[in-house]
Length: 422
Image (cartoon, rainbow, N blue to C red; front, side, top):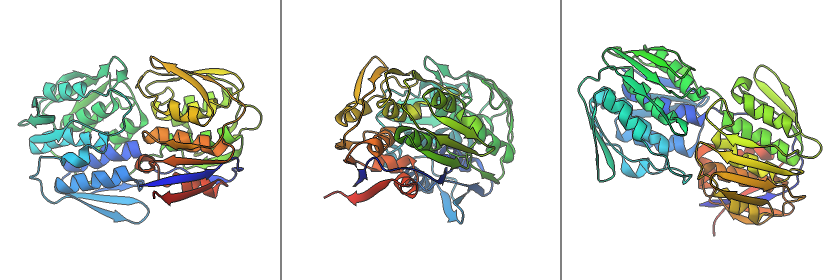
């Protein structure tokens, strides 16, 4: 394992390009199981989660080849395996997205209940209910989902739970429904850009889907899906993290290779907090001089502020001139970063899915521990603004979801050094 040494209060300036979306690429990789030919995904970020899923798919008979320009070629060479590797699945939740494709294409799946970041309760009941509605026989045996099916049959499925639509559940059910006999109607579907992008890939493979980007999807099953070439959308979470890095240091940068429309509520909140923004067709420039203004943030399903940048917002608001409230309606237990931010001098209290952030005049460097992927990014942002040296431990969390975030920030003027643990 390694840690990151950050010398704070360095000026950031320049231009940085966002990588391809992790949250879009992972379910796309899983649907290679469905294809009768090679799948070429362009713009796949080089992340630990991607490498883990490559290994997982390899054990399921899907061969992966890295081509130039971050293109990943996936092709099934052995269609027989149906049991996903338990250890690999425990490393990340997105590996659970192989369940729907395995059931739809190979008629069986044995997949352990998902792991990933410790950010609160994330049940998969809606995934399983949706697949069962399509005709899969599903049981839970010793912590594993065991699914069997002949040809799936279209059905009416509802995927919204008490905290909103399930994103990975929508990916799983949609990826199965495209090969089901007849028509499937999915209501309460997730509308996140990553789901729309997955749907666009499935369309390129020959699927028949209507309603992408709306809560109601209508799927007409087809007998087979071909290979395809598709470019993954930019990572809106990474783009937002980079913009918040400039906001917390009160500096000016430009982030290119983005879809500004995917960042609508984030950009609106940044403006409310005192940042000046210029927006182009595929870039955003932020100039964040002056004091941070307090702003209330509620993490919600798209098009709201994503839960995946709730922690980064909290880091930035810890230096606001006043009191802010941060709520998370997607994962109300996602507040393990609070104690670590307070270690740097922040004043944050939280209870029952709500944090009250009282801004302080300065943060001071300390040794902190990343508890999950997005918490690690929040600690990096806080370290950028803190006086002195901050050490962020357990960088394996950061590397799961960011393609060398430290290198990108260093190119903008940050001073960070990646070190091996003693």
